[in-house]
Length: 525
Ligand code: COM
Image (cartoon, rainbow, N blue to C red):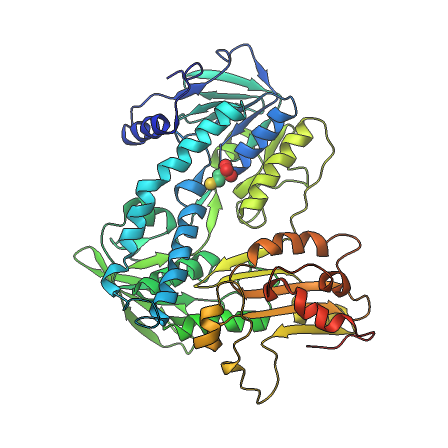
């Protein structure tokens, strides 16, 4: 279907994409300036997810000629379809549900009606609404960004400059691989039973309301989806080999922050079994009924459940690139690239979830842009070994820079500014601080739920080394804190304490820094 000279509006795009998703024999969607046969593109982006879409858009803006090819009939990749967008919807629901449960029948809150808190309703809400994001990505990329694309068509890599798709052959100076990743399932018996899901099959296939959940794995996905399931009333147990937030994929987790987050999950009734191995998933009549696990003590126990969720990580889709190009991948199956996103094959770049580092949006988009800018002749490096991070439980948890323990290994005079403070016999359980965006109601009636924050400062240089926050409303500020503290000149407590805070805003550490900045020799707070 050639849509180059058509200009579907959003509603028309939704229909077009729906038709393509439901009809396996539907035609490719072509948005090509000419038939493509005589053209040498600057780059073909295989995969139009966050990395490919942003890379191609940047290249086009620089005067280049990119082409995106994607197997799905929409751009944006897994983010709006199965990954980040549903996760954020579910995390927001978890936060709301948590508040409604704690305040059930208090103040203006109605009595909590557990029958109305359903996983399946939220999934159906997402399924019914995700088409708008898909439509917008296609519309914006065509009409505003003027990027050519072929959708609803599998790309076959012929060599480092040639790709076939939709029955045509396309040539380019460079290939940018952004085919993404898919969840990996561990090797334990019983995972073929109905009722076993990962975050992809959850939104595509769940067709009943689970009553209990056993989560296998201790990843960010395990914690985030677990907190959501539990908040709906689906009693959730997490089975993790490592302590939560101590998995290899997370860095710079401060121990006090970790204790507050994991303690908060337990306080809400979740069971968290650390040092525990899944042995097998058991079922009856083809449906899961329990999970056998080996506890830290060596004892094996059965955890009855009607729903198993896997949070055991993802692997990139590299097979085709390996077979066609002999591209180098590392021991966890990620394409090896340098800081310009160049792979071991000249002219072939890899981006997003295909490469090492966090499978996060900032890395996807910026790696795509880095590839594009290098292809267009810039000498630009992107090193994503340091980055701010966040996750959701029923809280928003954000962190950047060094933990207290990491700082103490390197610096002699580490100063901690923290709320609530660690002071013996202070009765901090009843201290309504930090009270800030989203925790005012908690502060005044359930103070121990008000959150946690810690700033780590080098007392000698007065520079902020790290910031750690549990609460609400701080994540946006951490984007800028990350930038400020990683500048060569860093961010001193004096500069931070001199910023203009908007109302209380303790989550941005401004007022707490101001209380100490007058000290010539900094002191803990
Ligand atoms: C976001 C997808 S949902 S993209 O990064 O805008 O392509």
